Image (cartoon, rainbow, N blue to C red; front, side, top):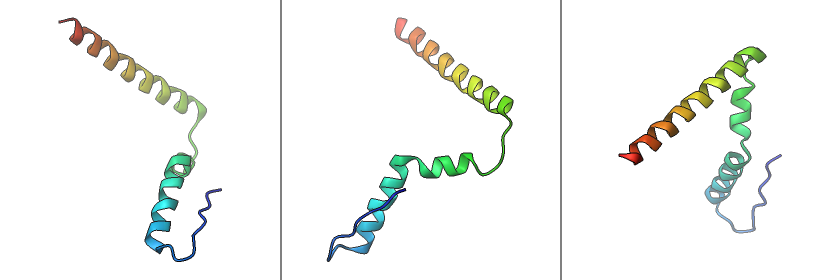
Length: 68
């Protein structure tokens, strides 16, 4: 649960910015978006495999680019 204590005399916009930063840091919005709809476990696994493959390929390309 994200909570922000507002000091007396503190600007409301400043408190809202603090809250937004806290929510982003804790990953609450990302977690909410991931749970908007049901995704089959096999679909999740395939998506993660594809993400890993993309990341692996980018690293390989970067390594070969450094060699030249």
